[in-house]
Length: 330
Image (cartoon, rainbow, N blue to C red):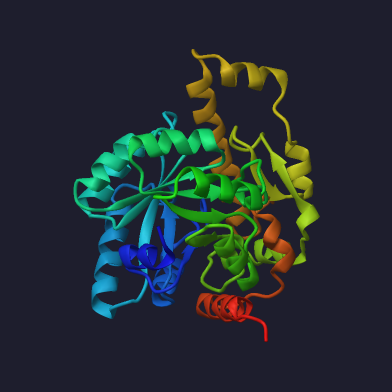
């Protein structure tokens, strides 16, 4: 596969995805990403009120047609069995003919079949070769290789190991690099490692379009890579957050009872659903004005985020840095 094939197929100008960010991605960010020529994605879970997702998808389709935006949009679906709204959200996306999907935390087969029925593409989050093999067997179009240092649900392997392994095993699949990317030099490095594109999340939180608190944005700009910690206590799946006092109080490891109930077949589905509900509540409170629970999801790229910039300027800077890094030395 190739970068040119990837951008042409997704109808975008630049090989950059704005990562789907739980309770952060919003309509203003998506439209700004589309205007900038990238693929702006968002979790369906961010729009849970009755009719909200369908209305948003209709507005985004209309916006792209009316403005001839050079970018596109995609939807992230949590396909784990604990996701209560998954089937309803998938049907809503199919009805709206969403251009492409990113699946996370489960079997993507149903999404792939539904998307391919009308020509849409599916990228699957993977953190290791085993996950990738299952997604490839299900017929996915490509992978989002999630490495260590990613915001939210991070993988255990560094991208300089994960990407070549995936590329060697699946030369015919698109490959998107995700985890700790906030500078154009890193985009160039990911291309050398075999990626067709990159997924960037944390950098876009520090933007006027992101409707989060000033405290959240300030925490990102003040943090360094060593201030990011991996916790199992937020959603039941290892998740990177800024090491605030509230995160320290929450803790990083599940206790013995949580681990036992999370692994027992009779209870693991209910436990995962309960933990995800709690995670929504905790992160949601952190995003409200004067949020009292400062649980801030972010990746290790915080160390490279030092100012709030409009999304258009962020993308422009990334591209300038990328092209400068890609030029051969004299």
